[in-house]
Structure formats: C-alpha cells, structure tokens
Image (cartoon, rainbow over all chains, first blue to last red; front, side, top):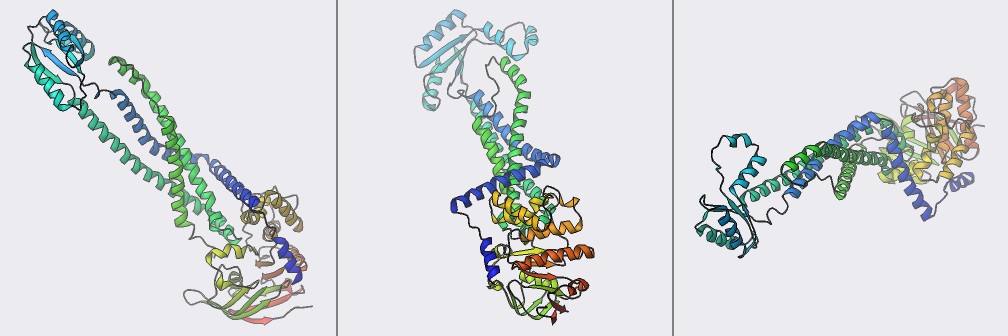
Length: 323
Length: 223
C-alpha cells in the first residue's frame, strides 16, 4: 500500500491558481491553432464550406451597402422641398425673371427661373429624346420657376397655403409640390431595408445549419478519437472545444469571404455607377462597406459559426460514449 | 485497489455477462483474468473503468464506490486508471509523442511537465527516440508499447489491459507482459484480461478464471 500511496501522491503535481489559469488559457489558444491546422489540412472542403457561408453573408451585406448608397444619393431630397411653378405660355422671359425676383422676397429661400429654351436644352441633354424633339415644330415646354420655400416640408398647412397663393397668380398656370415621388421612393427604400433584414435573418439560419452540418460530419469522422479521449479521462468540455473552435474559424473565414465578395461586386459596379452619376450631373461615387459594418459582418460570421457548431456538438457529442 | 462484491451485469435484452462476482485486487497486485470469449472479462474491466455500470452489487475502486460517481465524475475517475486495449487505439494523425502526451494535455499539465513525463514513459517502454514518428510506421508490438506509455504517463495507481497481446506474436507478447511486471514491481496494480494461458502460466502471478459470467477459479497470489 505504501508504495502505491507514494506513487499516487507523486502523481498529484498541483499547479498554483495563476499557473493553472495560464495553462488553461494556453490550452485554449493551442486548441484554436490546432483547429485552424485541422481545417487548413483540408483546404478544398474548408474553402467550400467557407464559400457557402461567405455567399450567404455577402448577400445581405451587399444589399445593405447598395441601400446605404441609395440613401446617400437621396439624402437631403426631402429636406429641400421644391415647388415647380409653371408659367403661362404668354409670359415673356423678361417678365418671368422679374416674377422670380418678386417671389424671392416673400417666404421663399431661392427662386430659379428656367426659360423655355433652357428647359428644352436640359430635356434634350438628359432625356435622350433629342432626335424626337427635332420633329416638333414648336417648343412644347413651358417656362418654370423652381422655388425652395423657407418652410420645412413637415409644415403641410404652410406649404398648402403657399401653393394656393401661387396658383392664384394670373401668370401661373400650375404650381406643383415635387414631393410625392420622393415620399414614395422613401417608402420603397424602407421596404427594401426591411427586406434586407428578413433576408439576413433567413441566410443567418442557413449559415447556422451549414456550420452545424459540417461539424456534425467532423464529429462522425473523428468518432474514434472522441471515444478514446473520453476513455482516458477527457471531459465533455475538452472534447467539445476543438469542434467549437472549428465552427468559429468557419464563420470567420466565411465573414472574410463575404467582405471580399462585397468588395469585388462594388468594384465591378463602380465604373457603371460613375457613368450613371455623370449622366445625372452628380458627383456621387459608390461607397464601400463602412469599417464598423465590415467588423459586424466578421462578428456575425464568427458568432454564427460558433452557434452552429454549438448546436451540432450539443446534439451529437453526448451520444458518443465508449462501449 | 479494486473490490467487487456480488456484482452482476445484465444487458438490456436479458443477457447476463457477470453473475454474482466477488473479487479483491490488492494495491500493487498483478492478476490475470482469463476465460473464453464471452466469459465476462471485458465486462468486468468496463465496470471498473465506468464504461458500464453494474446491475447489482458494489464496485469499489481506490476506496470510491463507483455507484456514487456521477456522469460528470467519470473523467476524473478514468484519469486514475491506465487503460490498454487489444487494438491499441492510437491516433494515427499524431506523432508518438502527441499520442502519449494526450492524458497529460487532458489533465492540463504544463508543456515542460508534459515533455519530461512523456520522455520518461517512452523510456520505460523502450521507445525513446521514436517520439517524432507516426504510429503507422511502427510494428504492432511497438504500437502496443506506445499505448502502454500513454496509459502510464500520468502515473496511475491501476492499469487495466484488455487482451493487450491478442494481436502480437509470442515473443512480443512476453515482452509486453514484462513491461507490466515492471510497473507492478514499483507498486502499480495491474489487471490483465487475456486468454493466452500458455504465456501466463509461465508467470508468477494470480490467475482469476471466469466462465459464463461466474468466477470459477482463483489461484490467489502465486509464488
């Protein structure tokens, strides 16, 4: 008995709490690196899984970027409420300019007169129907004064009164608030934004299932190793750890691929977008994914990977016991 | 070290692998467990390692009643036992060193401690210098010696071996038993299930015989 006791006593080399914590953290780092090594030893299948995750994450992230750009383009449109005042055909250009000056003195911040010839020229340039206009004998376009009221667009009553006043003017044929279509556009964009969230939620679920299934297969492939580890005293946590970290890596790699895909797509779109902006005489340039959003994509990938592997591990690891 | 009192094991379906077995293995004692396949040798070892639980009776290991060990306590219990299998159960994607180190890694030992102990264990089984090799490049006897090094690297007070020489030729089998005897000499309890009667009769250790789940013969300690 004495020999044995000495032996088992010798076995118990106790580490202090600080050393134990250091070893514990070191083990985690080692497992993290080990899991990465395992994945990189099968680069093709790892890349396949990461690509599926990447595409699933890239879709909502890319749409989010496009929406952000759409918002950047339309920013300020609702703030600058415009009123188009179409003048009677009989009003001369000199009178029109004078009228614009008159209107500015009231509660109007800016008034810009566009003559019939200028209107025709602008239409020819922007519409692409220049040739069709050649067929017309007469200039069909009226002169217009573009007004920017001091009132905020939220002041519906004030705007309404202003419109009434303008319409009552004898030289004015029609006064029109250029807001309805902006409101519709905003409603459409709000719907698209919701749509992106719904799509994001669905695709996140897909990522969860993809990672879960991949980890389930990995668990099956390493069944013998799991059994052995449990036989020589490995705890559930010890057995679980490499799989959880694999899931984390899959998710991170997927997030990284998603960022690359979004960047590549934006690069492909940048040229045409610039041309389009030029056609609209805008200085607009396509914006990429903001750093914070990029971080969010990576974080989402990592979190989904971890959660997916946790699901698989929770379901399948307990079933594997030595027999 | 091990005390079984009126132990029975009945599997679902009604098959009774052990019937009313009582057995005591003293600390530092080495014993062979023999009998035909199906006699209950493996089942007995599984009860001690808590791979199975007894249907009736009491199994006490190192003073611990195993019925009182919860599922969460099983890993801790197994770390006190070195287990050796007929099919070695090595991990073929890892080096000899990493295979032997596994129990220490599980137990959370420092890298320095692991290196020291793994080399000591490999030295004891005569494989020092092969630590960087992969198990697939080793012979059957060498693989089993790696498995033994893994079983003893955490210095357990009890070694269980289930048909450790089943796949080996007689010379290698004798070699392996010699290693077990060395551990027994320094105070480790060793319980070996085997049906290699010719070999164990040449060795001066206790032989316990099972037949259809019953303990039918026990030589006691032999001179």
